[in-house]
Image (cartoon, rainbow, N blue to C red; front, top):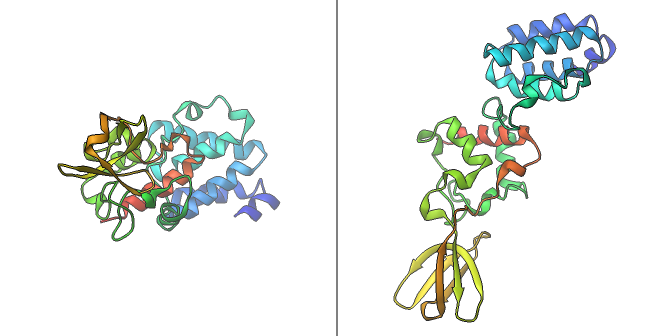
Length: 233
């Protein structure tokens, strides 16, 4: 499609519009939108404007909304589009690639997903169990929890701060406690045992050990990660 748009920018617009209207494969439609967005002619611009109006009206498949927004971002003449006034991840709920999301979950350094939540045998005890998360959480919740994990975190997974008698400060998730010691896990999943006699103060934190994805570079990455979480049943 990219070559079609490059060498036949005018005649290919109608073909691309027909693909978007009639093809049932989301990835194909997303590619067609990206091609329309890369065209530098008035016909392609009008097509993207029409798609943007459908996004605003709620009449376009929500799996394509982010692609329309991304296309508009590359077109200076559409800089005043209402889609660009929406929050960065508004359209990251639907249309993601499960396989790409799984790879992000496992390997992306910014996400650090495998350090905290558990999926099967992967992960640690300092985050929630996600193996069948889509059975109990809807897509909206999964998106919110991905970009702002601290907003929806269960109390048992919140960090606690420990101030010791030697003025050292430790932060971690409490794992177990007896009369003599308290064992915590830090954000890297490493455990540390503190003597209770040395703990001067304990304070609950309002954040989760997972990173806040509002600083994540790509709304598409978030969309793919949400797609993977939605596949966990």
